[in-house]
Amino acid sequence: MDKRQLTAFLCVFEERNITRAAAELSLTQPALSATIKALEEELGTQLFVRKPRGVEVTEDARVLYPHARRMMGEMSALTARFRKKHDKFPLSLGIEQDIASSQLITLLERINHNLPDVLLTLTPGCSGDIRLGCEGQLCEDELFIPLFDERYVLAFPLNHPMSQITELTAKQLNDQPWVMSPEHESHQRFLPLYGTSGNFPRANAGSFTLALNLVAAGVGLTIAPVSLVEEQCNVAFRSLPGYPLMRRTGICYAMHTQLNPIIEQLLANVSE
Image (cartoon, rainbow, N blue to C red; front, side):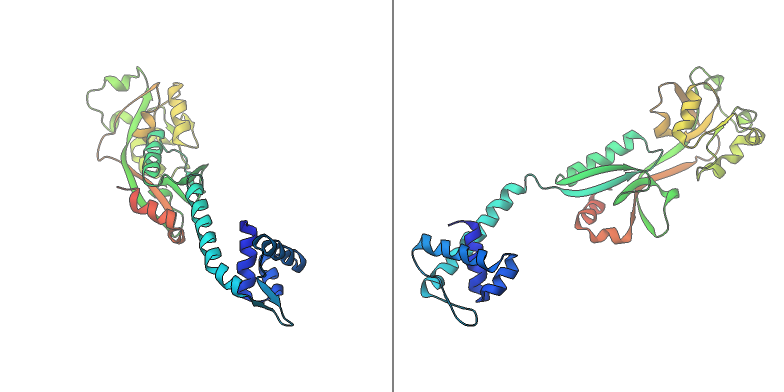
């Protein structure tokens, strides 16, 4: 007696009809009849009596039914117990440009701690079920959970004269060879610090990371988030003059994604 035979028996018993049971099990009627016949031969008893319309269950079939139901339940529970070790819930996380590795690793540690049964896929850019990005880059109708607050700093090559200045002033930033990221949403906030030399940058870059590569090569100075600057071996930094310029990084997500229980659980725990 195997699972296939028990499944066939239960379906015929409940439907009281070979044709309907075969359709429900996606089997042909001869195949289902052969399965039932094999079970009857193994048990040495008749389970169903064919009638012009449907089948009639025998007394032995009535005795077998609760046992078959219990056996199928136990097999399903046993299968689920072992499959739970291998089944993972898929979750894709988009990583926006200019996110520091330290911030990404912190988030991944929290996900791994709170959702160990998730099969995580990392994708670049504005993609995924949720994404790690800056608050200033939210798409329309997106929500945001802040995770990291950090300041923008002045980044310059190692051994640059800027490192010798006791107290940096806005005036000292004038006439510097700037490396800019004009397409970035923070660019307008930096214009007062660039001064007149902002009209004639030494170089432009499509991201803070690329701008810092230019700085490391000695091309010029740039303004970038401190978390990204700290990951550069050949770049030094110091605080900007005046009121600190800040950015906030966190989880960006569409409201409808909360319908996914895994994402709902993640959003509830990730900021702790």
